Length: 303
Image (cartoon, rainbow, N blue to C red; front, side, top):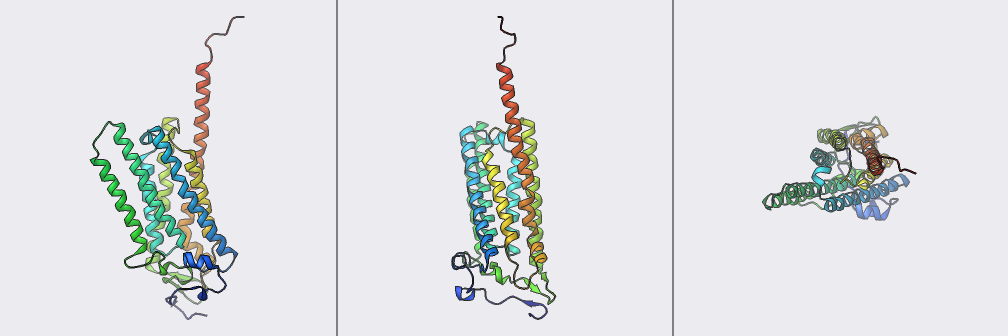
């Protein structure tokens, strides 16, 4: 048993010999020791989550380019709240040393949000009849800078893409107190606090979009598959965290506490996304009934 306040500051497993009973390909790709079915399932669910989030944005990109009314269909506060939440998610995951797949997913979140914001501003400029490209070029530069910053934050100066301090069985900032529970460092606490802000922003970002849909009495211009895939992505993302085994010497409760902001941010926001999907069907039904009533004859046909 570890001595009181012993820190896991030894070198992380750098090759398969350090994790003889683990999955070889997971160790090679993610430098993560997956020793049983729970660990392996967690990684697979995390990969499925990334795929869901990866494909979620493309239908909205296509829908926006096809209809050209993205600036009317999407709430700017929804996009900004989403971007702010994803940025806090990335920073919090980096500081509190979350699972590697969480960090990779957070990087993609930020990049996809920036692309969505560029499209919004482009259509806003175009629909206002502004032909100057200076503003659009500035936004594109901002997106490029933000994308590079997101990647650089994870890589660090002179570090490889897989940051050794992030590896699961060598969390440098968790200390064991000898009682079966772990305490958190100041950096962990700051990261978890930023992650909590991220969860609040995720929940708050949906409200402006819900209000926008109500005001328009329509979801035209929105891609239904965007929200369906986001729900699936959040579901698999949350499950991948819950399935992962705690670190050596870490209790289940401490593990849940360490990841709680990200669990709430993924599983908690699903209810609001389901509500937006209900708006799709509700407003679609109202539109169909309105079209039917407009085509009905005002006077009955005479026999």
